[in-house]
Length: 210
Image 1 (tube, rainbow, N blue to C red):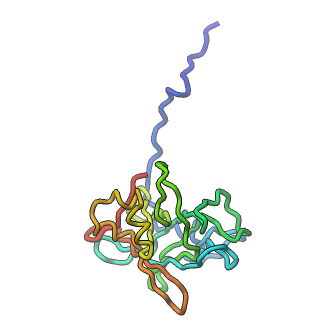
Image 2: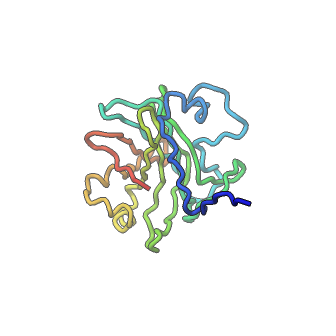
Image 3: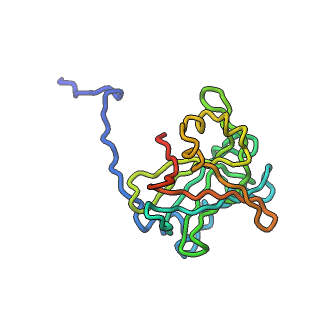
């Protein structure tokens, strides 16, 4: 009997999935409140830390700006960060005090700002064993962006840790490094950090390919 041709799994070449922009509809499926639609019972949104979560409670805010200097009012962002002790929470559960994953979006209201309610993350070790400065990983989706952009948010009041961070220090230009540093503000007695993300042009935010 003739045996069927078999190819070892290690030799199979899978075709790359096609990319396309997020389009103007990403809010409808993933940012229901921002789109003005009723939310689901369990919605992944921008409250990553509840009041009982351990650590320093902060709010992170910002805008997304295009190459012309105009606000991008329908951008969608996903955030991934460690908790106050430098540990990532692998499972999402709305009942937990803290979740490492969150989502937010810019809108046509409130100055077109995105925001995250979270705790200041602890330090996490780089694969080489060196501690990285406290940071929040961000992925940005928007119309005209074929593949989502990845960047990081660092904190201006962590100057010593920032100077030693093995990722941040790989950016040779001090001016370029500043595009990742969120500025500390105090609004109504609450600690807030601001990072405006520029997609291209002068002052473009540093984006990572990882």
